[in-house]
Image (cartoon, rainbow, N blue to C red):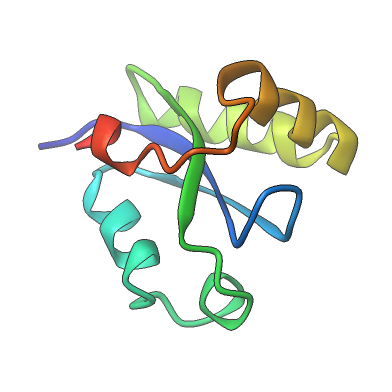
Length: 94
C-alpha cells in the first residue's frame, strides 16, 4: 500500500527526534525495530510521535523540507499540538 507520509520519531519525551518521509508505512516498522541504520538507530528513535499523510510524494517531501527548515522548538510544538503526551502513534498509522 502506498501512502506518502512525513513522520517524526523520538527516543523519549522532549528527547532526540528524527524526521523522515516515506511512501509506505513499512518504514515506520523498520525504525521501530531498529532496522534502519544511521541516526534513528544510533539515538534509539523508536517512538512514532507525529505523522502527517499526503496524497503525493511530492507534497510529502515539500512538507518534510518545510518542517526540517524550522527550529527544534517548532518541531516540538508540532508534535505537542497533535500528541501532547508523546504517545507512540505507531498503531494508528498501520
